[in-house]
Length: 290
Image (tube, rainbow, N blue to C red; front, top):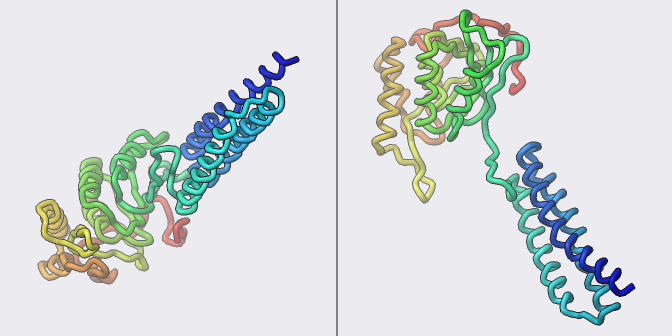
């Protein structure tokens, strides 16, 4: 009988160690597949809580049947660790931070239209990795027909100039058509200008401003070699589409909170718009992001 009780205590201790580890890997999987920090917290907390209960029961049996009291402090420390970890992870989950994996929530998406396989929608910030994500999505897309126009519909507040330049080169090299139905600000405007076919909805917003980066105190800085390179790059694109010198100067306005937002008429007269109709969709088809 004593041997059976010892085996039971050993099994409970093993479960007390194994269940939190299992909870960790479950949480990693939830974050990676479901993109849910709260779900990851729930999975980890349940299994880790069960593991803590197993340690508590093992301590109870050890004290009762063998007068063994050394597990008590271990259970207490495990309880404090569980409470502390739960609070830390819960705080991260509340702010949508990923605790268990190195997954970084993307502020962008690239989707292929189900009915028109040559039509893609880029929605969100042009952040690190977005250019490669768009390029991979298009080049590996199923059902894509390169004998007819390939379209990227943009809806973006802009983002990193470096990423925009990479994506602009892809758009130019592969002769991608650009459409804007919602908004296209800052670095996004370079993507629009890089295409030979540029459609802008009459109610869409197009915004320009000089490239900048934020200092440690949050103030904008416009004086950097790579920022000047971007400004020169977009100036060349505006020149190629036939924009006037005055338009190009206004597009360089150094404003981190505003910018230059030309009217539809100005965009058409300056050559930014050269396509009056969408390739696959109707102007009346409201996109999901509006």
